[in-house]
Image (tube, rainbow, N blue to C red):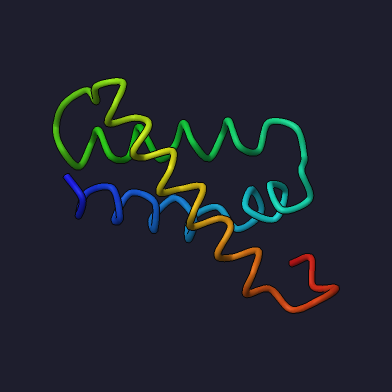
Length: 79
């Protein structure tokens, strides 16, 4: 499942730069959108529903990925 999680998170982050930027600005709804997309994408890759524990793994991987984008962003750069 690890590869599917990494692929799902990478796909969602790459496909939604405007939502990632909204998350970085703490805009309401941005986390819910991104986390939902990551779960749905992972489910598609695996061909099945995720358990509650697996959803939490996806959310954790997404959160870590988003934090990494925040840390690598240049000061003052909101794009």
